[in-house]
Length: 155
Image (cartoon, rainbow, N blue to C red; front, side, top):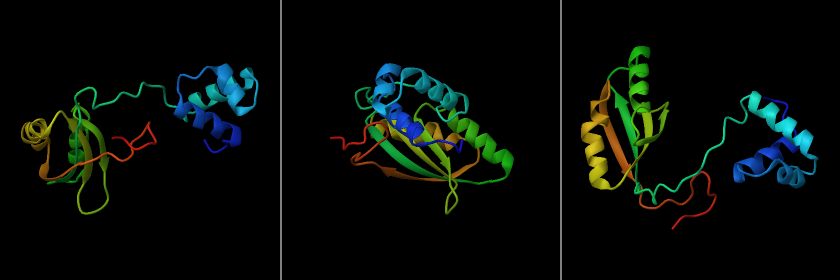
């Protein structure tokens, strides 16, 4: 959607910061009345600019404080192999993000587990068993400096 104006962008900024804001409060913050703000939000939802609303939870408080980034190299990069790997990766709850990469490896994953032992089990029993995995390289996170939904440093 290319026709976003300054008001649309302010609406998006407010919604990204506080998804449960009321339309009345949102209208006040962007300087419009409620009806045009509702229409703009609906238009952006229908166009797919706003994909949905969700609760941001703290994974550490859920016992998922261990983060690893994993480079994955496949043994086969033909379409069928890529699709098989991608489908299998999407099915793993430990995989928070998975991106196909142009470069020296094929995929980059962000994996969350309880601890290093949980990660080791994930690596040995799940990740290594995915279709066409030839090799992996793991990078363990020592500290999270910034992550989506917070905008601030986490301790």
